[in-house]
Amino acid sequence: SITSLFFIFILLIGLYHEWNQGALEWNN
Image 1: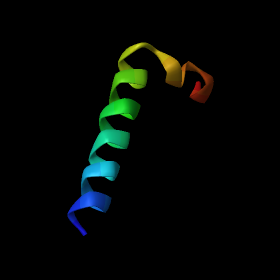
Image 2: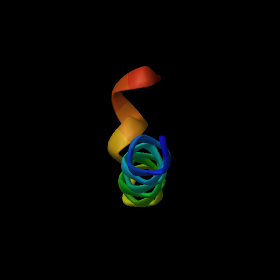
Image 3: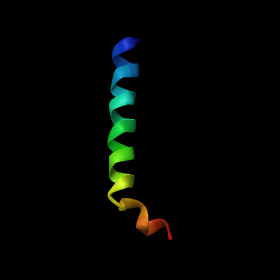
Image 4: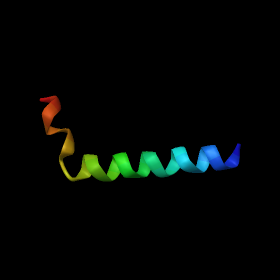
C-alpha cells in the first residue's frame, strides 16, 4: 500500500542520514 511504501521511504532516508554521520564505522 502507499502507506507502507511511504514508511519504508522514510526509513531509507533515516538510514542514509545515519550513514552520512559515519554511523557505519563499526563495519570496518
